Image 1 (spheres, rainbow, N blue to C red):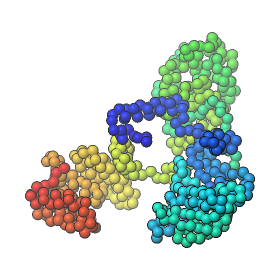
Image 2: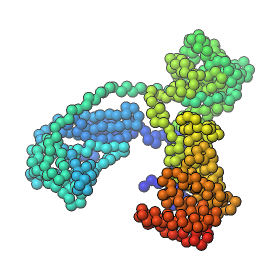
Image 3: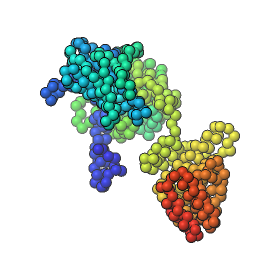
Image 4: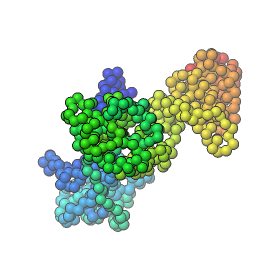
Length: 587
């Protein structure tokens, strides 16, 4: 079974796991597929212990990225159809089985359990045994979940073969509890309800209309358009123009949109692209775009061309800004992509970069691009993060955060539950860096909600510190949480317990603990809670009031006995003896 690093029993296992994962990550960065391009497959049982790959013949072997598969007689014609889900589009495919049936060759059953027999209505695990008149038997078990993110129909479908006749059906509901049903015919759907002994014929349901459409696949072009959902501020980038003068690309981008094009004299697509840019130079200028074409002939290990870039651009008629790309400039542009996009590809030529006014790197085009795409991308520049984020997506869709509001506390709480304390802490601290604010008197619902969110963040930071045995830090964060909302019983209880039980006298504060528990016990039902009364007893013991600590602990013991929570009694009895000896509790 695959295990996570924290489950490793020895350090070498952890190191091997992380090394393997690191190698996998490198492969993915270089274009290998971790979980993608997994075409559908179909195999035919040849009846001799081997299988034949019939993916293409069956029509299932499509170039989708397949995931789940579910089997069902969807059209109720007696054969099994197939639904397949994909990771990428099209997200769902339906394969209708149109193989002609011959003779009465099928029967289907739906099982309904009886809870009064300790069998759930959906009796997963029940087994159907089909007795045939020729003495043969067939059997199937009802399953729940039969593949990755998949659940096939719970109708148990039997193919019978030609001239087969059913004698009876046995259903083993659980253990030795079985039941026999008779009077069944082939080519029917039957409901078998536990305890009735009678099969109910089920009429055909009305089928929903499935809308179909052709899914066009774009041919591989070797080009790519990449957009930054958050544009990057470019550093100072310089290049030499063909006269040898150094030019500052950052300054050029202060007032104009820059289309930075990397090209080579030996690259035919580069030549065609430069000609296109020259032909459309007026339209580009009207959009505020300046083309900067930088030659990279001198950067290759072996230059396949001896042409002079200066005479070359004159020859093809390009009249825009031309220069030579420095190794540093190309390296920075390459880093801007490798640090943003997980999968790494070598930068080709031509390659172009769209830089918005103010020096914001917004788009990159690997390989050639068409003018229509470029002009459409220009229209998205400078219109805010929402527009940039939409432009970065290769297809239209809905953002999950519109449908599912993120909950910081739940997200951090999930990390804490999984013992990923560092991740939870980073999440909460990043929130405070952006949105921390002092407590505000709540005069409306919005202010109250803001206070509660801040209180929850500090409470969770306190929880992380407590779980990591950092009592002092936990106390600081719990106190901050109460500043935003003082009537948090959970926080009051946690804080009072730590203040009462800290071994370090410099951290222990019995008076504050007593004040907290007195306030806490005023809340409804808290005075009948063993946990909170136990905290109160610890606080009074720390303050030297052992009479009250004993009385509260005795009340806790009585409550636990009433609730029959005997597993917690031993700890309380130990505390009672401690308080009766005029000693307080430390942890």
